Length: 345
Image (cartoon, rainbow, N blue to C red; front, side):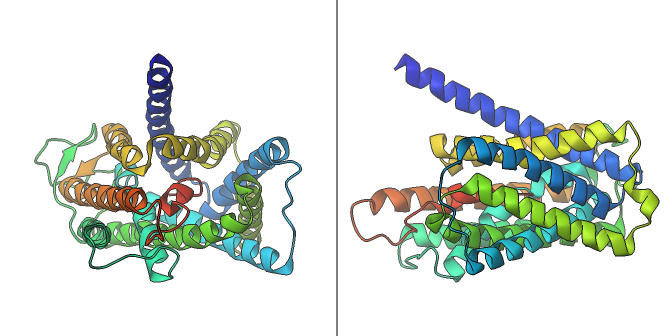
């Protein structure tokens, strides 16, 4: 019993660490963008460094496994690499036009969109007449409603060191306003949709090729190549030279957010399940809001997104338990657990 308790405490400590890492990554990325670093350049460097780290990890932990390189696999990895590029760029555009706290509040969207795509494409079957099936659909709708609310309604600034007062409606310097804010919010939603679509098809691939670290490393390196190629034709050569102070920050962002973070999240989800992991999301939002700002619309929308995430996760776990010894109406492999490893929000 003591060993189990200590093990669970270790997982909870890891979950807290992931939230601090995510908050640091979001704030650091926003700071790098404010320094004038081009989004394509940042995306190229981050994906390349993360891909290199994961390639080393794949060599150590997945060496000897038969990946069975085929034309179909190469084609899928190329598509995944392009998806990674789209997710990264949309996320950076959204972050530069909104705020770190807003992006943090949107993080659970990709997991819920993954469940939606899984049901849409038949990866995960749902009985509409069952309570669990209805809960999943309700969770997705609630989550989508929260995202729409966050796009359309900003409201007064209510939390954060940069708020002049709890009821202040005066635009603050670090947060975009009006149409630009809505464009940034829309980019974050598109990034989450793309991550959900990628996660759905990646989960199908992982059933046949159980080498997640290798596949993720190759995907990141392809995404870096796509970003670098796009940057060569659109970015001035001087933009590729980072100053000395930015180099270690970019390296930390790459290693923490795209390498260590997915591993910790996957391990935590496998130990405690997606519902418990989802409960830790507000920690990240709270941390980032203290260093940026959070608005009333973001709070209401984030609560709806979190409720939707918990509904979907609860329904998935309960459905999996109730159909463990019979032909299941859920996916054979817990899809929500898979996406945590490739979630790039």
